[in-house]
Amino acid sequence: MLILNKKSDLSAFLSPLSHQNKSIGFVPTMGALHDGHLSLLKKSLEENDVTVMSIFVNPTQFNNANDLEKYPRTLEEDVKKMGKISDSIIVYAPSVSDIYEGNTVSESFEYDGLEHQMEGQHRPGHFDGVGTIVKRLFEIIKPTTAYFGEKDFQQLQIVKKLVALYVIPVEIIGCPIFREANGLAMSSRNERLSENARKKAASIFEILQQAKLKFEKQSVSETIQFVKKEFEKHPEFELEYFEIADETTLLSTEVKEPNKKYRGFIAVFIEKIRLIDNISLN
Ligand code: PAF
Image (cartoon, rainbow, N blue to C red):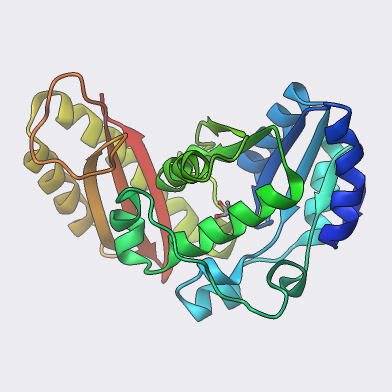
């Protein structure tokens, strides 16, 4: 395994491979790797000549200083986990200055309105930070294919839009959500939950699955009311939002239209830790 901290070293390593037309698979992460990340890594290893994984806790996508400070940083363990899968992974673990060169600010992006919904509304500036880092990583690594998890479904749609708007020659692959045995969507933030909260957080996916059943027979507003009521029964949670939105535009809907794909999107706090999840509804 090759671990590089400088973009100049990474570019020097990758550029001859690009010239030889080798396919470069890329898995961007903020570390604290779990099986969801590892599934992306395995897919990239299967499908490409070379696989790069970045581990970088990107400061510009955090709108909450406490969340940034508490974000788990576990590079040594992450490297061990990768080593169990393959010793040919290229790890890029840069410092903030290697990426931002003394100017740790986001560029501004418009993603045809995708940025105004859900996470964009509740985490101002978040998608500017995501766009900034993803675009820079694409410029440095020049991957042929990049892999993103569907847990951050809005992020996935935004990255696809970014690539289209900036005509970046990379294929974006969305991969299914990985869940813990109790259904909780895997997330690096789960590390910060107490054992008890981690058990209780299973309710998030249980309620989403029930919402899917409701949605088959009932209206959008009835389904939303159902979810809100269910969370009222669980005072340990603070529901930030549950929205039903068109999968492509991410616009919330009040009516079901034929031939449209809908998804339920949720953000909840438990023990002051913010968890997100989503489910395909039809
Ligand atoms: O999904 C994440 O972990 C991050 O948002 C990403 C894509 C690595 C950018 O920092």
